[in-house]
Image: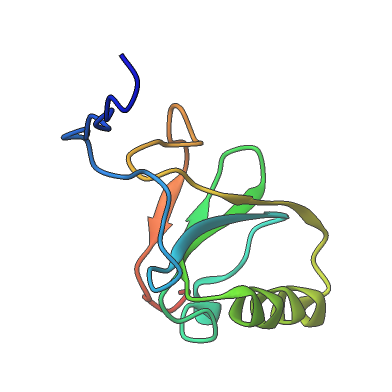
Length: 108
């Protein structure tokens, strides 16, 4: 039969890709441990010190301009940048998570 209309089946699953209005979660890996005194400078990001000596900066980044701003801060620190990766919602790139999370407490 011609003229048969096909209907698109809609999924009940949430759309995993962020919309332009949603920030993307990024994980920025640095070589070396970053002191907790930098928590305020990287406001909104979680600083995770890993046992292998790397530091992970993880958190929402609203757009590419903000990501470039974060990368400028990393450059200004003088610490080697290892990687920059978007993190899929609900997926951990640190399996298992090693190290400790810094919560803004000053170094002793």
